[in-house]
Image (cartoon, rainbow, N blue to C red; front, side, top):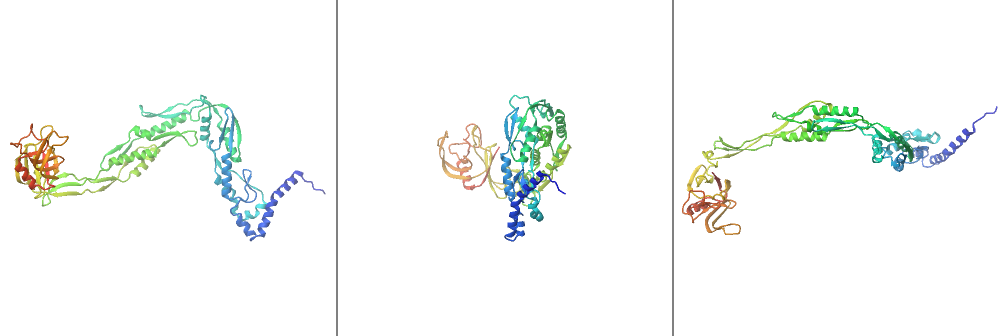
Length: 489
């Protein structure tokens, strides 16, 4: 009995045998040299098995990094030629197609994990690996919008905008138009990625409705308005509240295309919310103030100069931010609370002489100080709360060159000095005696050119405290540098 067979099957079988023959020879050689089967298994632990291909490209014997480099190179050179309504040539990346060369290379070597596969590869069917890639309809739409000729009647998506006068999000209607079919271009791009080679597509204008309709935009606007209308309030432990107004909340809301480009997504700007919370936390903080008070020798408080204030720092601003974001994204009202870490304020105490609290300067017991009274034009020297000299009549600054007021300290002294007598001064007094400076160019000094003291007004000094020469000398001798001088009305 004669057995019939198909000639094409015979030819195909012969071709397959010839294709595998080099690998069989290589296998035999490798088995014969350097450890036989073990060497074969080790070599193909990290090299593509015989018969492995990616997009029709033989990668047998290549390492994973070599395959990844090959795939990346071919993907970069692959182009899509667009003709018909427009003529363009685009790369895969321009069309939003990403080829994952690393994942593709990893898939090519996945059979190597089995030692049995390493030995049977020369005798089994080929391993054809598909290219791993992703596509983006948003990128396709963006590319089409970019290549449409100026003035073309392209469709316009509905959108959402914030009306500041009405303090509400509103819908801006879209419109129908003409565009290119994104489906045909996307299919061409994914085909080029799958084959790792260039391809072409012919396109025509088609009537196209906007992807984002009024209904979709209205749903997004409603969601945004719900977020904005919900109250946002934070209270601190002292009972003070911090509230976000409508404009502030609206600035947190971002309305834009969804990931797939088919809807409008409403998102809350985390950075903006966190910035607002941190600003309120800063306003809620209380700065530590060290208290200052005068006390008598027995410790009893005489006067409080500066009230002590505990420092209060907000400790949970980041937690409040996260809670607020959760409430906003859930469309719920938010009422949060700041938490304080309190630092107890301390007092700086100064022991003063009994009765000093009634004077313009609360001096310590025995402390030297000078009272310059501009109301009655006198100078009085004290030690603690006790008058040791004066009051002595003097003449202060004339109207327009008044003597300064405040608490100062003696910082410079001259037995005699020329005053004025230089550019910028409109007077010159030679050898002015017993000069005691207490701030800037203001001093107590003798005025031998005057014959009366204890008055003020027209005819007064250029700002210094004019005293009888003998009294000026007494002050000069008695008050060392550092002595407090209080000038007041």
